[in-house]
Image (cartoon, rainbow, N blue to C red; front, side, top):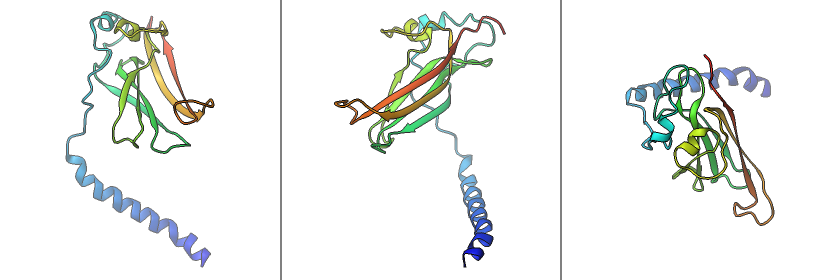
Length: 165
């Protein structure tokens, strides 16, 4: 019996996936949802930095999304993405979003991985680089007494200056 399942299981699974993809293609004709959130970096301070080499940034674009699920609470999600991507690499900065209800609602926050964080009026320490790319988030064990039920969120960026193309 196991041999039969292994031999015929894959074609059946492949057929089911094909059917699922084919049936969902009919719904792909509707317009894609675009973020209703304006760029947190669409400020005069950040836009003044757009004289960098290369093509101008695509304001309000959000690319390279990445999400992590808290291993201690599957309703706690944290994601990050590039905000206002440049055509020749990087973005104005990274933005993070987090949810405590499994993604039904999100809170969005700019991350301090580029000069646009400061130029857009956010306070606190930041990296003094022109662009940020390659967002990553992870959730690991926390410190006892942490407000996040024992979880710590880690975020990283590949931040750089685009001085030549």
